Length: 341
Image 1 (cartoon, rainbow, N blue to C red):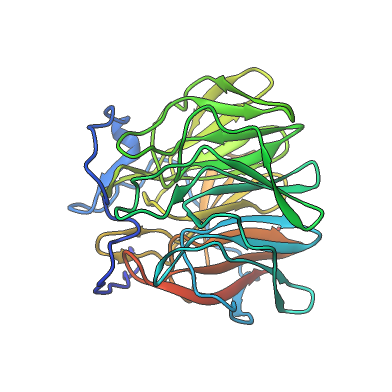
Image 2: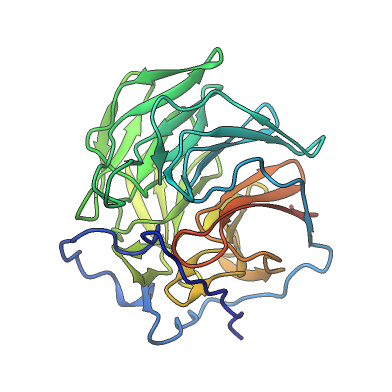
């Protein structure tokens, strides 16, 4: 049964509304798209019950309410980077230490960014792309790449093209960035960084923005997203192998959504959290077992959100900040799912 959505009225331009005149994207595979006019069709993939031991609990609230953030884990802390606050694009960087349930400020970005991607690569936090402050939300995509080095942000070689609302992760000894959009169109080419520069690789099979990504160390998994419009949602799950340069389609997620977060929970389980559509925000949490290729529900988010940071540290899956209603509704909420494996 679908979980209720949280709905809000907004005065600002919606962070996950269309935001700009767009071109018509290529038609996605029928099995991976849903609109809010009809509930997403649950795929034939077998699902199993949620583990009884898993449970969410509240954490210390973030100092700054935000959404559409980038995030990465370094030194046992989750770094929450940029995003949107009530006034617009943010340069704020804060980190959360789950060992002490404490937040601390980090060096602010040199520019305010939202819908950027981030990952930890060779011991450094790297921020890729995103959108710069502009009158319309998606008017100014960025190709800039920044690394946090010795307490300061430094520039790395730029992306091959400006893009925001994509998804990235470190896979082995490379960074992989996939999906996303520029000001008007979905982007296909996958980009790979080897420490010296970026190169293009095979295009993602289902072009989409507002998707999520995670890595098991060998492959990049991309999940969910949307097709420029906040009402055209994707359930696609796809895997990219940098060694072969090839993409593979996997069983679609039960709940089509965009603006969700995702992280690996153990070596063989991908967990997807939250999301939104024009009717509201999602509480759904679903896990994909890489070995059995089955999806299973997990306990829903107590505070449904989109544009949130989702990362695993130890035995906790952390869901930090994010929008609590459709569009721009930034929050400081922080929650953890315990007993993940």
